[in-house]
Image 1 (spheres, helix red, strand yellow):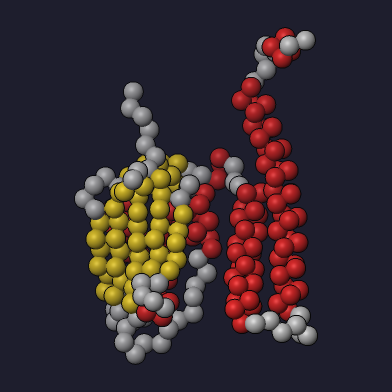
Image 2 (cartoon, helix red, strand yellow; image 1 turned 30 degrees about the vertical axis):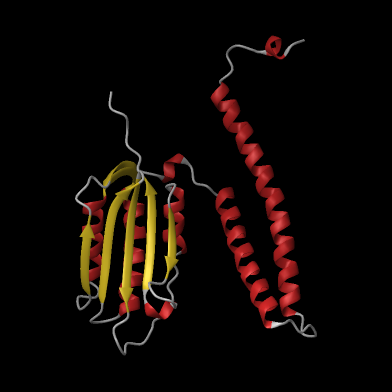
Length: 226
């Protein structure tokens, strides 16, 4: 019997495909989780071994590897817990308005911080969950405010580039101001990833103490006309 002879009518192929993909993804997640947990365990065992004296370069490389494996484990958990459609409230988002409102909301908590907005005059629109993306933008902005401290300056930049909305939050600490602890931005980063985007946290100088920088990327999604 050929493959074509086994075809049955009345079967919802999209439903079957979604279920097959769900099982496939579940198996991939299971296999990856096992391998990553083992790798993380071995790395921890080597780094925590009291009788083992590691040269500093090797310890540094192993520590970086352990951090990378930890990030992969976190991403695996996200794959296994991807929310359903009901989690999103989709609509057209105008990032000019969203960022203006985020600045106004965060500035109300720290009026002494100066904010410089450099927003592209283009469309800067996409489709997504405006409420959740607003929470993410506020979290990144609040972290910049916390980093620079009273009397500091925060710069907000936004533009469209290569079919992506690019948003940057940057701040430098006020001279003599104490540096604050790094905030937890895991939820904000997760919201961007669930929208197909990403966030890169880094420094504006050679060291993290010289400046705070977050670059956000979101794919531009617009409905086709007609």
